Image (cartoon, rainbow, N blue to C red; front, side):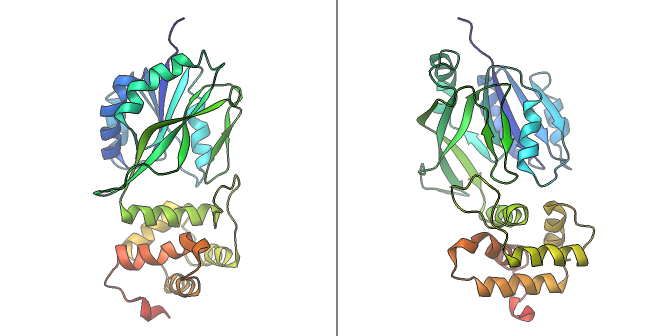
Length: 281
């Protein structure tokens, strides 16, 4: 029986350094790579194209939907197995070395068609080892596959939904600063996410208030990246800063509002630590 091809699929934007790190590790173990770029302004395009034809580079303008971005890569896969990651995720050496055997042992997906690997988060220099979180990042392609849910996207239409769990890990490599940025983005896209939900999050009154403020005060903002740039540059309107401070204080001890509170931490502690939150009470 001939070995089935393995495609590495990666969603990225403005993170060429991570791509270089990942490609060095991953490309020797896969047959091809499909990269979907949300509109990078760094060297991502030139770097990916320098690795053609093994690396195939495609652009799709980011529209605040992970679902749409992930469905894009499926247009360029027609068979075999897919190893999926975001650009801040890196498969371990053990995972990569055993991936081909795992695919072969599936008997063309009849024994199992989906493999869950264990997440090992790394924050800067801090590595506390594998977590209890598993993610389905290796699976056999099926024409029926598609992604649902704009924020915490998931696949439906697997070959037969036979899933196995592997102890091999992949690394989720983040900085604390970028973690808070990601939490702000998640709230902007999906609201409050309930752990384990297969839908976009809850959208309380505070969520709609933020959206209305941004629409009125910054009509140029179309996606979260636009808002993030204003926050990074310190150019968001004072009324939005007041929203940030007011709701941080309101939900300071409410664990379900972690992603809302991230706006405060990201803006006042990471982006502009010399700016006083007390000025916006």
